[in-house]
Image 1 (cartoon, helix red, strand yellow):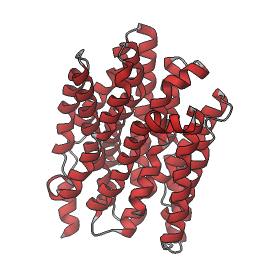
Image 2: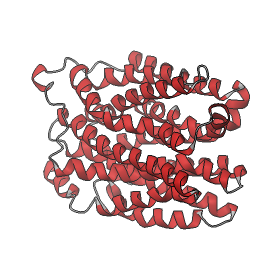
Image 3: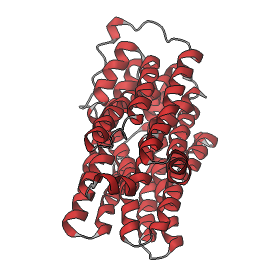
Length: 381
């Protein structure tokens, strides 16, 4: 339950923004490049601050990093609408993204400590929380929370309450992990000379480019296409279709966990999804969004299993995770800026989603040479 809640907290505040973009546009007059920066800033911090997160986890342990991180996520998220002002919106988004960057590599480490004999299921559980947070934020923000709260600023404040409550529950209901071995504190810097770190990072980048690229530009693309009525349904399909991916991994871990072919199969599924989405029919928009969500989530969940499975010792889990997130989210941020700039320069809305195709190439090519099954069998032996 605690792993699941922590997963929800990592995404519910982050994904509350895409449905609010038309309202934020109206009040703060952001162009498409600024929109890409707003949605991409937390992703950049997931990349740039992941190594700092690894250091903090090594110093204070994964449990405490999660507890204090999600409380600060809630507080900073709630303050994003103060003003409203562009400075506060971007400033508090910076703080929120930095806290997410600390918590995200801590969750695989908690899995290693709490559920070492059932890593696949535990990873699927907190991944399910991540996806549920995305679904709830995308589906209920404009449909229920904005009408209830009365403004996009108060809607952001409302979603900020959940991480604060979750942090208190984690503090009260989970046992301390114990004193951190001083000799192991130095093992926090990701090993960027390791091919495994880069392969996992490129896979992470592929999933993030697809998912965040779609969430960032799909609403404004649909608005530009004259079908604003489809923004909320498409976001629900995009995020809701991710939910079954974690369920499938949890039910059939032996089929998928530690294997590379399921990740690679997500690449042609993504390409097909883009083609269907651009068809000028309501059903095609929603079906394409759903396929994009499922493909990115399926590869994402399977990639998260690798750090706790392949780590040689507990202290290596957050190091591998931090390196993976640094590479993956760095690519996702760059692609978000590229998509926004391509739209601004060309005036063609569809160009904003071109980076999604690049993400599919990462999923196709990065798993080649990743010998996960062999290493898992050798560890079992």
